[in-house]
Length: 110
Image 1 (cartoon, helix red, strand yellow):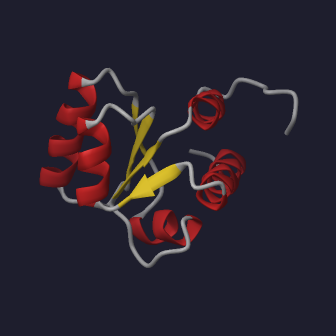
Image 2 (cartoon, rainbow, N blue to C red):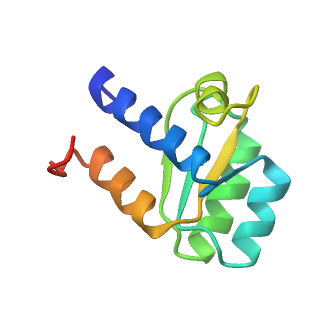
Image 3 (cartoon, one colour):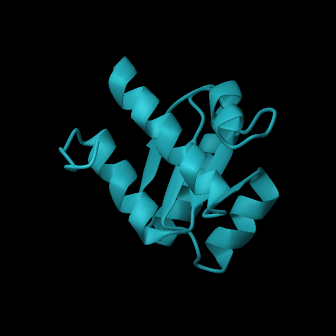
């Protein structure tokens, strides 16, 4: 991921956190996925393989797209927390915008 996309992603996640449209932490994310609230799963690149496997499997069962990006420290910082290995967007608009950033599609408002 290049620096520009990384910065846009961090800004988007920060906005989602301020809008309370992102949940973080293993237990909360697991519950959101079980309740079918998740629209986009985010995994920290340096999360444990067990965590990645567990949440990737859960997201696949719910047809929720998954992205592995940032570090646990960066992900937590975006959300105003310490370290976060996993987070899930619960808003379709934020999920669509994140998907566009990651696919490098111009959104017209950047």
